[in-house]
Amino acid sequence: MIQYIDTHCHLDGEEFAEDREEVVARAKAAGVSAIFLPAIDVKSCQTVLGTCAQYPGYCHPMLGLHPEEVRADWQVQLTEIKALLSGIFNPRPIAIGEVGLDFYWSREFEQEQLLAFEEQVRWSVETRLPLMIHCRKAQNEMVSILKRYVKDLPGGVFHCFTGNELEARELLQFEGFVLGIGGVSTFKKSHLPEVLPAVVPLDRIVLETDAPYMAPVPHRGQRNEPAFVFEVLRKLAEAYGVSEEEVARTTTDTAKRVFFC
Image 1 (cartoon, rainbow, N blue to C red):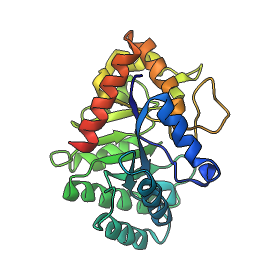
Image 2 (tube, one colour):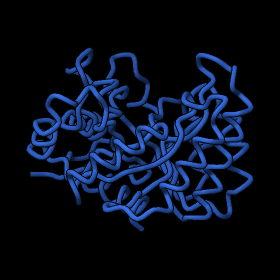
Image 3 (cartoon, rainbow, N blue to C red):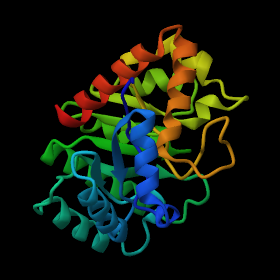
């Protein structure tokens, strides 16, 4: 059986409270060799660490403050999250995430988001942990911040990439960074099957589900789960004109290089 990694899954979420064991069992049966869990705030940092402790060596934690969770108390939250990052946990955090900028719904906390993101970028530089970056309707602002630290960044993932060729080229200018590709790539109206092979080398891609969100075809509309990441792998193999084994091997090697180098 081919093996591959789900680099972004909210397995700690309440959506999996009733059947988390079964979800993990299905993932393993489908060939998922590891699952990376991003936190979104202080509370979820605890649930991510707790969930990963239940599956050591299989589930790996990422700690950070998600842009949509940035509120007036963002500084307090960052202080608590940074303390967790410097703590002793098994398994240890493998990345700073999920962090970034999101101006899709509101710009109410725009300045706070910019400040919170930049502070967490500095954490990445200091700790040498890669970044798991969420960005929606804010690529210009995100790129501007990253460029200030470009020579010192250890790398990371631009999570849930759904952009065009120009956006892909701009992001790939950051060495050590790769694109996280998920269920959107399987949607009928998605342009990713054309965009990615045109400008993105296969070794600059990692697989992800963002479960329980954005389930791929043919599971669209259902709760997403790590086992479904195979549908993304299958779509990428078709788009790049290579075997499923090659996509699995290449994306797994890339994930290990980014997160465990």
